[in-house]
Image (tube, rainbow over all chains, first blue to last red):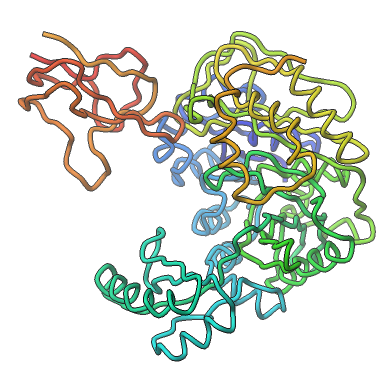
Length: 457
Length: 77
């Protein structure tokens, strides 16, 4: 491998180029016409314009990306996250065209990207999944028996459905008996198939995910991240390790993730997402992300690994360089997402020109960003400007360090989510890590008005 | 004669979704508050509405075209 093409944009394109340069690789940055002035383009050894601003015509344009690789002689492609990162056909097309694909095989993406297939693979590997009917149920007596077995509340979903349509939640058997025929009739009307399946509702769960690295035969875990602070199912704050896991449960959860990664002969970096119910102490596999994730730096901070560099090495054919016992968890790391959104105004996005920029520094502070002073953030892509990550010896110290780093961070010229994080980092509930995936939204309803201006300390 | 300007920078859409007809076409009458298109900015969709009544005589931006804040989208006669 000599020359790596980055098939992405924004902060992750910058991140990937850093790893590539450290490995002695030349970099090719593909970009849309809206990103000609981006930091990733400025950093790259070569840049290739692949289309107009619309992602469908640029960052999702497989033919244009493959042509850029051929024209520049790039012998490897890294997809980052989002865009084509979990597109199995793109993975196959890259390999067919010649370059190395920095990710798992198209077939691995297909299996783990399909929720039903991933669930079957998880069960086969002995990994717990959300209790449910394991397929469709047509017989009412059988449905009642399953509902009793998995426990209420139970979600009734249309087997042929999607996008949340036809979903009903029954809290007891009376409600279940009333809702089953309704759900079946609605499914029949909407999808021409009255088939239903059942799944237990995990009401107050934490989102905990395990980072894995694998070389196709062997997998290791790099411990977990907790990402329970979410708005509209988007993570806003991530940390490692989770404050909710005992060492025994952590070991068990991480071993589950390794078992599943090895069972599917996984290769590269991946993340297995779980719901963890800290009242019952049960965890359930929900899905696997077959790519590098936005929040990977918290894992890097607590393990000392460079996950992006490792995934490039593995793609290049090297076996995994670490044994499980080489991976140690040290201290605590927190990442907050700095988005171009105004948290006081319903997270209204605000693209614009960066009039001033002060990046926080000091021990244990990292800022992965696409920003530079004078840069105009285009309106065509997502609102992530950067990720502020801190590490310290323990969680209270990491919170104090995050508060200090946030106060230092100054982004002039557009609204950002910094005031949200300044409030969260000082919140009692956050200090106790007493949260779950539905904690942040009601908190925002109560606190949004005071997020209009920065908190000066 | 007046114009409807884009309130935001982003991508202009003339339809509520790709498989639906345009909100408005040349020759259509618009009332105050009528939606004439959407502007997508950082994956959030914002309606563009008419602030004056009139009849559309021209569109200055195509469907899915990138536009700047303040750019004329529609000519009203």
